[in-house]
Length: 425
Ligand code: HAM
Image (tube, rainbow, N blue to C red; front, side, top):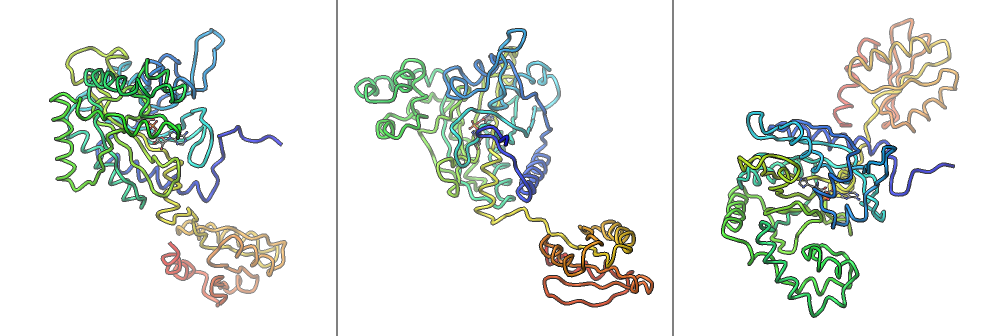
């Protein structure tokens, strides 16, 4: 037997209906906030990710599916989509279009992580990016939009918020981190020992349990923020308070990608266990220029976005909202005898035209067997199409939940089905 590749999986009904519900809700919320959809390729040059996400991150350093193409160029399956969106923004000079660039995307991402509940090697993200403004109001609106999506899906999630300042702030912070780490680094994991020299901020993102007490005692970035970064963060917090959006300050939240500046955030769920980040995002001023955008005006280079993990979001919808995705089947049309198959198929067509979900039984089987199958398929009603009734323009309608049946005029079928469907949905 051939199995799906490790960490990659099939998503089957009824769960797929939950995915569609999430994607429909997200599209509707994005529409309300003026976003348009972007679709980018799943394969990009490896250099895009090493430059944008950072060669020193786990994502690029350890987790990408990378291969040499026949012309020897190095290609990677995208581990995330912000790099691709910014590449497209630069490639198509999207800042030349009027207004802010507000883009959303949905699709598969690939990271060669150790699979566990909520963590897969192929997973799906829904994300959105706003390019062309550094205003805290834009940060606020993105978080407000996310709160709306969370409410509409019935999931429970808490916002954790930090500011990681600008590169100069982080330069000062790195020095302080190195000084604090100097006496203890020998006891930390090999990755942290390397990160101490390459990018000490990454140490805050280390997941090794034994390193956590050391990390908890390290200085936080807050006191190293310069005045403009401090003011940006203060204004965002004022707006969140005014908008009634609750958050928790998370001074050690640094995110696992190198492009972030200033605002960094995650929404975490209590229902998910170890992989509890439902979504993450932040500001990434400077990335567009690093990928070739012009230096002025400065706003070209200012941007913020997020991505949510659909796989995890679905787990949260199941846990928090009790959602199953089961879609009720309204009717099983049962031909009583093989001769009634054609009239049963015609009736099913009419029933579907009236908006009811219908399947047709197998006239070669006994009536009792067909009723059994109808119940197993979850049909609310069975409609029996018998020879004698057909001649009289009548049908037998059987309520499978109540176990009752009655004869009705065929023309009244839709009326008899309608109230029951309202109850079922
Ligand atoms: P990220 O935090 O790496 O950020 O991923 C965002 C979300 O994707 C996570 O919070 C999680 O829900 C989901 N996710 C990540 N890895 C996996 C996995 N292996 N299995 C299942 N779900 C996963 C980004 O990707 C940034 N591009 C977000 C962003 C957009 N920042 C600015 N704009």
